[in-house]
Amino acid sequence: MSSPSAREAEAACLLSLEGALAAGESPDLVGYPDEVLEGALQALVKRHGAAAAPLLRAIADGARAKAGRKAAKRALYRLAQAGVDLATVAAILGHNSIRIVQRYVHPTAEHQRAAMARYDAALQATDRRERVQ
Image 1 (cartoon, helix red, strand yellow):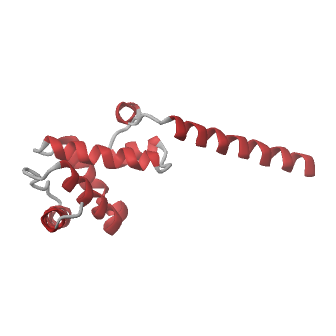
Image 2 (cartoon, helix red, strand yellow):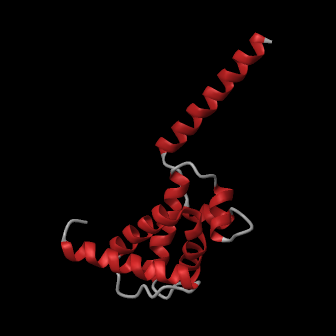
Image 3 (cartoon, one colour):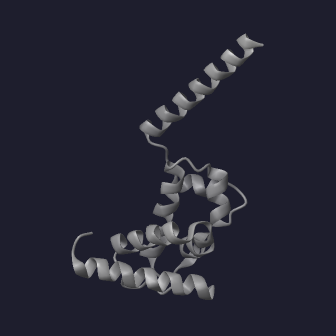
């Protein structure tokens, strides 16, 4: 996002999100393009961390703007891509099960390779510890 008007729109959207977060209400996201919503949600999470979880959940579950739900789900998908386990993503969404989260999170081939590399490293570390004992 490079144009001043796009940055202004993202700042206005972020202000709306932060106001809703402070008031415990759902934000009015009508009229914000997807890329503006996505940038504002990322900025919200960077600023407020876990405190932003209820607002992300509310947006993902039923914001008036379909684009808002899409942007929130993309943000949660990125959490999973960043290595946050699905149970935690489900908890952020307020779900008791990871089944619903699995609808939106589809690991890429690269993520699968990275997971297998971590698994292999853990096995090798276990083997080394067992040899030392």
